[in-house]
Structure formats: structure tokens, C-alpha cells
Length: 437
Image 1 (tube, rainbow, N blue to C red):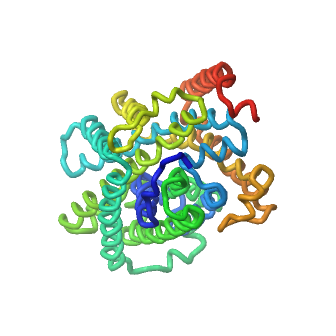
Image 2 (cartoon, one colour):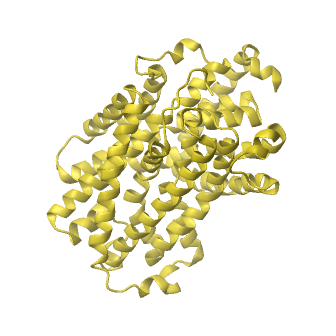
Image 3 (cartoon, rainbow, N blue to C red):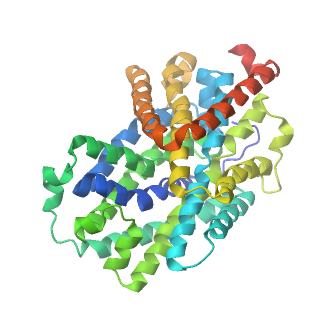
């Protein structure tokens, strides 16, 4: 833990951040697409998506329980895979936060449904600035802001589910294999893999390992409970989305279109304003809340000048936070589409996400005492098998994104990675940890 860091965050603070991180673009954008892929199998696809997400999440939970620290994932990679690898991971993580733009652009597109004719670029940039400012005011302020938004969000989605279930008259569709697998198991799995994007995010609570109460128990509990709650919520949303109207009217449509047809104008506006828009803001805010932790730890390790980690009077490393703000707002100002930004961010996320997951492979050999005393730990065989399984899952995700992103996107990522490798080569002699690897 960073010397002098205070224990600020409790279980419910972490639950609000985790829920806000998970519930976002995925459920409000991808549900309609998944319906076009698997029809009435969409609610079941969320359960399979949970299984897909579970393996990488369990790996991070086991690490967080054994070696909790501020900058969690970065420190796991550093301690288990080496200092050079950890800085490469961190650099890719920074690039992957173009996903900030997807939440802001999604917010603007749904806001346009309520206020036709608004300038969506301005709306996206404005919500980005709002969350940036909230986190500049400090993590406790951001956590309170997050708690309020999550309560509004969950209440709105539950209201949508309760209202919609009253219109579902036939549940037999969800037990008929022909309706669940209209495109075979391959189509069902493809939908589930897509929907996993709506469940990722809880693993980043480990970034606060040095700033929470009882992290060894809190990290795995928050990760597990938040995922279970979100899946239950998503299943209800999927049932309403598929069961109220004929299937051909909702395939490929987002939740706003369904809500507008089914509910009264008041309910529709409440759902868009209190559900969809808030979900996108909570995801955006949650990323800002944790994203600077790894960079701060990198300065402690010597990879970056300590002057970059200077904090304002609220204890926020504002230079690092501003860096992520620039990464997030650049795609907005460049006019990139929501779809492209989301898929690009997912592909980069799958790449850097492999690093902390695979760090578990070396936990028992690098940190045997920490493994032995961890409140939550996996059998030794699982610390080997789970990371390998995650490599297969993430590898498929990268492969499936290759064609859409195109050569320009991949060449840009390769060029960025090459520059980072050059920096690592010249900087490593000045990093004490490199001499130990």
C-alpha cells in the first residue's frame, strides 16, 4: 500500500463503484443485437455471459484477496510477471480507455431521443467534463456521486422490469430449445460472448485495494455479489425486451425503442432519463474513479517522473486524470462512431486484460505466504488452469474484432506498442525493479 494512504472506502462504496462500472453501454446497446442473434435465448445468454466473465473475474478476485494494493492490476502484473511487463500492461490500459468515449457518445445518442436536435458532440463532451470534474474533487466525493446515481439507476431498471413483466403473457418461449437456439448453439454462444461486455468491470475494484477496509474479503465479495445482482437485473430486462412485443419488432432494436412502444410517455421518459442515461454516466464516472491508480504506482516504481503524480488539495493526481480525460474526449472530437469506439476499446481491453489474469499463474511461486493466508484462494491447479482458460476466451474476443477494426486500427495499436517498448528499453536501467526481474 502507498505510505500514508487512508482507508476511505467501505463495502457499499465499492459496491456502488462496481455496479456503476458494470451497468452501462452493454445492456442498453447490446441487448437488441443479442436478440437478433438468439431470439428468446437472450435471457439465457446473459447466464452464459456470466460464466464467460467468471473465470477472468475469479482470477482477479484471488489476486486481490492475496495481495491487495492500490493500483491492483498493475501491481499484480509487476510482482508476478515483471516490472517491464507491468508498464507495457499499463500503457495498453491507458490506450484502452478510449472506452470512456463510448459511454459519453452513447449518453449523447440517448439524450437526443429525449431532446431531438441537440448537438450530440457537445452533449458527449459535456458529460465527459462533468465526470472529470467530479473526480477532480476527490475519490470520496466521486464515490458519493456514484452512490446516488447507482440508486437512481437500479430503481429505474427495476421499475422498467416490473412494469414490463405485466405485459409478458407467454413464458413458454424461454423453455423451447428451437426458440432459444434459432441459429444453433454457435449463434447462442456468439450472443453470450457479445453480452459479456455488459458484465465486465467489477474486476477493477481491485484498483482500490490499498484504499478500502478489509480488502482481502471485500474485493471478492464485491466482485461476486455485484455480478450476481447485475445478471438478475439483465435477465429481467431481456425477458421484457423479448416478451412484450413480437420478436420481429425488437430484433436489433435498443431498449429505448421497446420502452417507447410499450409504456406511457411518463414511464418512457423516466426510463431513458433515470435508467439508460444514468447507466452510461455511472460507467463513465467509475472509470475516472479508478483509472489513475496504476499510473500513480508506476511513478513510485520509477517508470514515470514523480512530478506527474502531483495531487491537488482533494488528493487527486490531476495530471494523470487529465491524461485519461484527453484519451476519452479525443474520439468524440474526432467524430468516431459509438460502434467503432466500443469494438476498438473491447479489443484493446481483451489484450491488456490478459496480463493481470495470467499473473495468477505465478502467485503460488512468487508470493507463497500471501497465497496461503488469503481469505479467498483457489486450489493450486486452478491458479494454473483458469488463466489458460481465460487466454482462450480473450483470444477469441481479439480474433472476432480483427476484421471490423481494420488494418488502420491495428497498425496504430502496433505502432503505439512499439513506441512503448522503445521507452521501456531506455527507461528500464533507471527502474530499480527491473534489476530484480
